[in-house]
Amino acid sequence: MGILKYKYGFLREWMTATGKSMKDVKEAVGNSSNNNIHDWLGDGPAQKRQQERGEEIRPVAMNVESIVKICNVFKVPIESFFVEEGSKELLGTVQKQTESVNLITEQVQMLKERIADKDEVISSLRTAVDALKSENAALRRSLVMEKNEEWTGAGFAQT
Image (cartoon, rainbow, N blue to C red; front, side, top):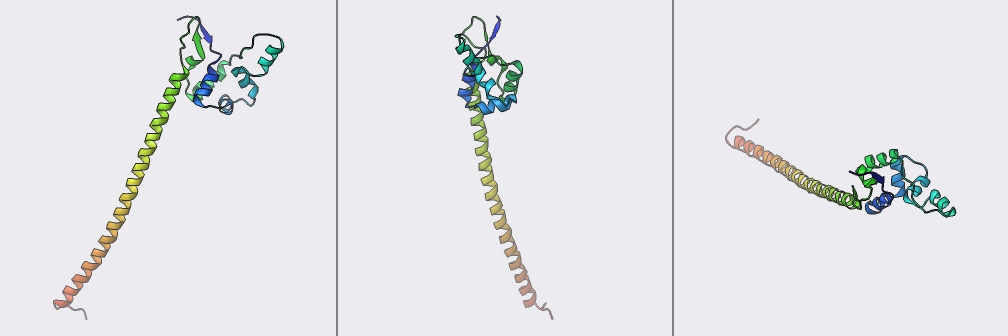
């Protein structure tokens, strides 16, 4: 394995692919300022200063603590933020992460649907049980009345 370099465009690619907002990232890293995030994305105060000085405009590399926080909160593999020097193949790609997120989202939706189906079945069963209980109570009353009539008719009349 060669030397790893920070992949400057990853954060913007990841946010675009996953639909995460600056607010989401800001909350994840515990930052109260948008400036750092703008700097990491390449459109912040640091880039404005570079432009004013006539320098090449580059995003600012994220600090390790912020990278780790994003990885922990959003389950992003840490290697996604780096690329091997001289290699065009990324160690972690946004596409793979997006596919994983989509798969998990689909599985969650399927589970929600199964739970909803089970809730419907349970509700139907409860209704059926309640109906059977009512029917059972009515049959018991009917049997008691029949037994009372039998006893009355058989000479066991109550006085």
